[in-house]
Length: 264
Image 1 (tube, helix red, strand yellow):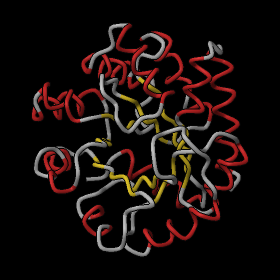
Image 2 (cartoon, rainbow, N blue to C red; image 1 turned 30 degrees about the horizontal axis):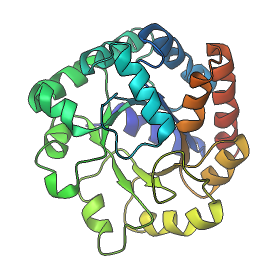
Image 3 (cartoon, one colour; image 1 turned 90 degrees about the vertical axis):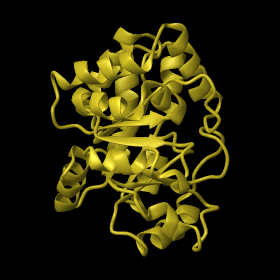
């Protein structure tokens, strides 16, 4: 079963282009504005949209993403409303892949089977669930793949050669390489450090390897994409939303980052 994510990376590979992936917290600063920004992402050059699922205890996220989640929750954002947002986006775009990124608790509370049915119906293509290790694959990863959703894993600088095969075992769509140890938005990624790690992962899988964390300028986006299959930017974009930038300003910034990755 080919997902929108698989199709997108096949198309990019055929064109010899790198991917640009952008992260937006669903419902930040509110539902309508969030939807407006998400709808504008493909036109700004975004190849894959990561949609953050707000959660009360986001332990892997730095202050920028944590605050975005708090704003969304205070505005009444829920798992169901996040799926509503994806559904509304799909009314005008049936090709851009959406990856739902978040934590297991809201999914577990919703009920895994019901969640997978609802997510698929809303037009979600893949999941990144940061607090479910490979040892828990039967909880969500395997059912998700059976339902036709990619399950995307994170690899980090501390994922050694002994651990890597386990991380890759049931991964699909792409591998998300976290370029720095620690939380999101904490430090800057350096291509010289990332390149060898990406090569190590690519030696163990045929999946695209996309690099995120610590990318905050067009130059950095280009440098990282040049040593990987693409770049992910989250905190830097969310910061613009938090600063009160207009939708046009946010999307102009996103386009500059996308242009950087596509120039690699």
